[in-house]
Every structure is written in C-alpha cells, then in structure tokens.
Length: 428
Image (cartoon, rainbow, N blue to C red):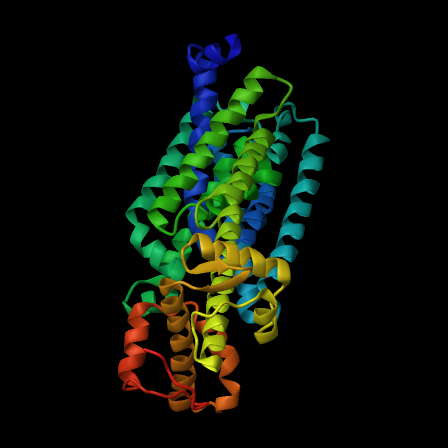
C-alpha cells in the first residue's frame, strides 16, 4: 500500500517523467494505430518496428552519440523506406503484401542486428544501452529524451485530430474519397509517416520486438466497444495510456520487471477482457445473442407447426402431444420440451392433460409466422423467378427476421395475395 501511495502521489520527479513519457507514447501510438488497424494493415506496424533498427544503428555510427533526435531521424528514414519498398514490391510484382512484409521485416531486422553487433564489438564507450531499443527501457525517458518524445507524441495526436475526417474516410472507402476530390495518395503518405513516427517514438518504451503490439492491440480492443471511429480512437488512447501507467507502476513496485513488456502484457489482458465482455460485439454478448436467436427460431417453428396441424383438421385450439409435433416436423425431444415450457411461460401455449394447445396470443403469433413464410415464397417465385419447389428452405430462414415494415411492403407489392406458390392459403 505504501508503494502505491508513493507512486501515485508523484512526489518523485523521476516517477513523473517515466509516467508522462509512457502514457504519451502508448496513447499516441494507439491513436495512430487505430487507422492502421482500420485499413487492415496490422502487419505494417511490425515491419516498421523491425525496420527502424538499422536506422538507429546508422544514426549512432554517424553521430557517435545516442542523441534521441538523431535516433528518431535515422529510425524514421529506414522505417519509411521499408514501407515504400513493401508498396513497390506489392504493386510492381506478383508478390502479395504479407509476403513482401515478411521479406522486408527479416532483411531490415537482420541488417540491424548485424550493425548492432558490430557496434557492440567496436569498443565505443557510448554504445552502452543501445541494445535497449530491442526490448525498450521506459525508465530512460527522462530529461531531454522525455521532452523530445513528448513533442513527437503531441505532433502525432494533433495531426490525427486535424485530418481525422479524411483519415476516417480513406480507412473505409478510399475510392469514394478519391471521387470526392480528396488527395488519397497524400493522405496515405501522411498515415504512413505517422505510423513510422509512432513506431519510432514507441520503441523507446517497449522496444522493436513488442512495438507492433502497442500499435495495434489498443485499437483491436477498442473496436469491440464501439462502431464509432471517434469513440474507438478515444478508447484506444485511454487503453494505451492506462497500459503505459500500469506498466510504469509494475516496474516501480518490482524494479527487476522491465516496463515495456509489462505495458504489452497489460494491454493484451485488457484486449482479451474486451474480446469477452464488450457489449454487442464481445464473445459473451454474441453467444447470448445467438442463443436468443436459436430460442426464437425454435419457438416460432413450434408455433408454426401447431398452426399446420390446426389447418389439417380445421381445429387450431386442439391439444397436441409431443409425439404429434415430432411427427409433423422433427425436433430434438429435449429442446422441444424446453421450448414448449418457455412458450407456456410467455403465454403463447397452455397445457391440458399432457397436451399442448394455443392460447389466443399463440395462435396469432403462429399465424403470422406462417403468413411471412408463404408471402416470402410467393415473392421469390414471382419476382426472383425461382421455381416453387426451391423456395421453401430460403423462406424457412427469412421468416424469422422479417420486420413489420418489410411485412407491410411485401403485402403491398404482392397485392395482398390469397395463395402461395403451392396453392396454400395465406392467413391474414
């Protein structure tokens, strides 16, 4: 508890520097990564993250120091060059983008490791700590380094804010954006540059190896919470910033724990939690929705088959046994019993002497399902020119999702028909 209070009181200037640096870097990377994710270029971040290593080494060789400005310039050049080469290979050859990314990633990273090894054996005293770019060292974000990386992070956020509408449009429909006269190529170039810059700044915190996760994972997690791009960008930034803060705290409590990997672990945990519990799009929510849909289909099929039995003997309120229902249409017996009890609770069925029969509400609901089925069969037969003996299966599916508005439109288009393609009466 004492360490928690000490950390979040921010009384130590070094803690403040690390926290601000980690939060800014992770949040800004997440903001840019949102559009990289939406353009389905998740692997591009990984390619850039590995391609910046030779630029860092080259900047050190030429300058002889670990000045962050030179490091950023060197990393930006090789990172941007890697994307240009990937794009050139993809457009000028038959090689697909994922293959081109794998080629460039491995080549650039291999060259970077070769240069880094050479520097480490050169005897240059200034090279100590250069290998931290491989795995990150957020604790080094102090003094001049912090100011430079904070400025770059703010540039990323401000640029995305200024071009937000245009970036959103090209992320979803670049052809439409081009038709509107928006300079798509220039915006693609801008997004490429922002992606490279985000990776270049982020590697100081999480390193070359893990940077791709920091770029894409917050956006992937945010996508489960909303369909709105602005909200998605804000959620991604919040998740990224939260992981940066939490990673810094873990490093403070356990100094032997590196900040960068913990940032990635925390954002990964947040993403996994989002995948499961997010409303509407989460795995649990979708499972619940699918179960509800299965129950709806079973219930409506039961009511429909009761109506068919009522048509046969002209008695819709006659009691039916479970066996009679299975004979009319096969249902798994256990599912059938559960469905019948559920319909009874909902007031659509009643039970007398072990037999099941309609209530007034149940008869009306069963009648509507039959009507929708037969209307859709007639629509497919009349307007889509599908043979009557080929329309049943499609109608079995669509009858459960036709809204009242579509129902009214079908009736109007078909002029309130009396018979379906099989000459069966359409009930109204």
